[in-house]
Amino acid sequence: MTLFQLFSRRRDQPAPIEVDGRGMSPYSSEIVSLLETRYHIRPGSQGAEIGAGKGRLAELFLKHGYPLIATEEDSQDRAVCERLKDRFSYLRVLHGTPEATNLPSHSVDFILSERALFSQNLALVRQEFKRILRPGSPILIITDNRLYSGGAQAQEYNEILRKYCSTYQEKVLPYDIPEAVSQIFAGTEVYEDAFVGAHALALEFFLAQNRALSIYPAAGHSARRKLDTALTKFFAKWETDGKLLEPVVCRVACGRFGLAEHDRESYDFHPAPAPQPTYAAM
Image (cartoon, rainbow, N blue to C red):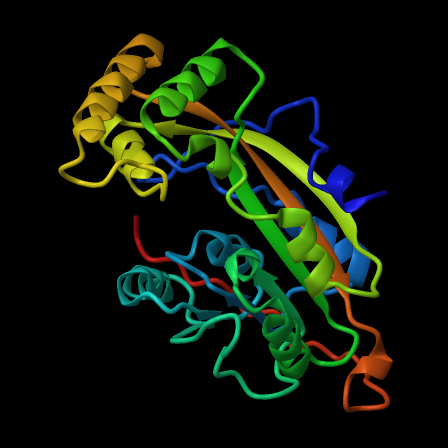
């Protein structure tokens, strides 16, 4: 399978739509099953999410009994991620980047990351991931993006961006996913899967999500007010009960470096006992 096919494939049946307080659907538990099936990790294995953001992916693995170290560069996102420690005592949150995680060498059994794909120095990311992984341990690279085609709603949305965003054509695919995956996993076998779902966004989240795009007109630009108005009308047309269902596809690629690439010559895998989740009263 080529890397282009890897990030082109999707399942026919969408996942059930569940949302959190921001209108974001949680990651599928099948992501956990993928690593467990392919690489035999199990609850108690020490994981690290590099570029954890607010902790959406970290929460999935924490719920399944995996202790995690979450690194995040942005202080505000890191503070939100820290709140998960109220429910999961086996979460640590640190400042770090994909190029400089601040984790000890050979300290984790698996790595999760989306932020790595955005790095301007993928060779350094690969070197850093090899340093912190225990030999023979897997990496899972994940993307979670809206579907830009496939129906009248998507087509209308695309037309709005095309009309008001001068760089839209350049930014439909803002980074070269296959090339990034190829550089991180160079010389290794890569497995893939894809999970289709949807976010249910209120108007404020929908507008905030779009304004965060690098292609969105800057504040004060004449096109910005027009685009805000167009997106608000688009929302009113397609919303149901005050929420806009935004189709998304979560694509994952996982692989591991060969043992020979690490400093150690051998490695015996003995995960710690699975921690017991501690949930705060809801």
